[in-house]
Length: 281
Image (tube, rainbow, N blue to C red; front, side, top):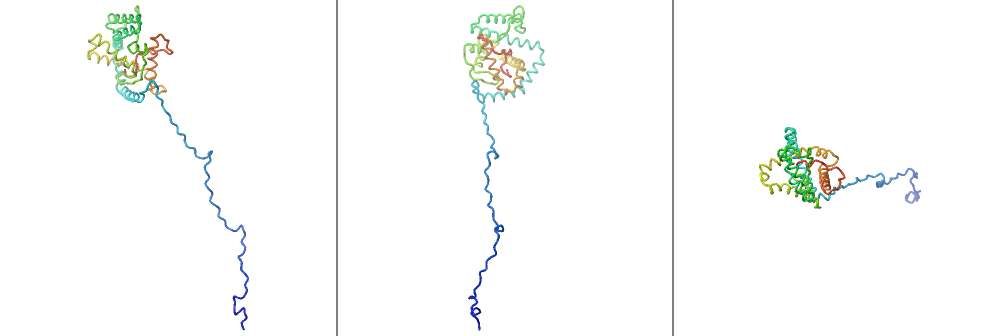
């Protein structure tokens, strides 16, 4: 006879089976991924400073960029052609002949110097200049010999021209220019230089208005001037400043010192004796 439990096994009470307890230390845990730490201002990458430098344009050189281009071209031509020819002229021509040509060119400029001393109301210096011109044109063999500066005359050559007269009466220099065939100059100075060159052809005529005279004399003047300026030009090029700026400032200071001297002002620095304005002429 089946018992009730055998007839219905589901009726047999059973005890619940529970999982064995697991220690807390044995329960696996998943650590959260660390969040990225923002860079510290003290240790993070520091962006490089962006420095913007500006080259201010001097007020006397408003055409600076165009002048610099002209300067680069002229300097290249000077190094390749003008300087070698000038040094060949210096080394190849005997010094007495080269000195005679130098004196001749200075002598034919004396009338312009005398006229401008008159315009500046300096009749004494104008008379001395006329006397110097007369002595060198006769005794000095058309100016080839500078007899007037020696005993007993003691009449030195003085630099003057229409640009100096304009500056003497307060005409501003205007913009600085660097021009082919002229070199360093200003609006005032290039205007005065053109008047200087036109004086003898206009008021005297031949041979000063004949290109057979003007071209050779211009070439000789340019070579003589380049030779005379070479030492100063090398000094300016080898200075700690860009050659363009060094030449510009030298020219402007030199010209101002010469005009101040005409006005009777004592220059703060000795006025350069070389009457040269650029490495080209």
